[in-house]
Image (tube, rainbow, N blue to C red; front, side, top):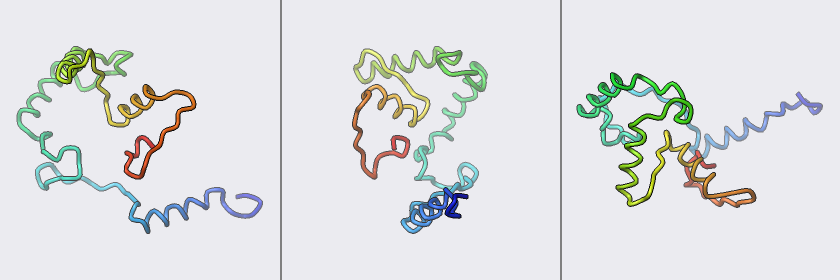
Length: 133
């Protein structure tokens, strides 16, 4: 509490109320078992995560490479798979090289970091992905 008797975080209640009124309040939802619904809101809208060839490839990769990298690519996690994929991607787009990121957030972080510097002004709008804001 402050000397005024108000919590220093009281403003958050107003923010939450406004977000709810604007339809911007988000909450976690439990995902149903695979195959029970068509999911057009995910990154798997084509259903490739359940394609037999993808599942078989995943099982083979687990047997060959294990269930995790054990560390970041820089520390212990770089594999032939990373190198081959980046080389193939570079060839596909006609570039000298390519760099693959583990998520959209890290891709945005890498791009913004590489393309800006001290004193840079980034301008975005309401449609900018939340990981950039």
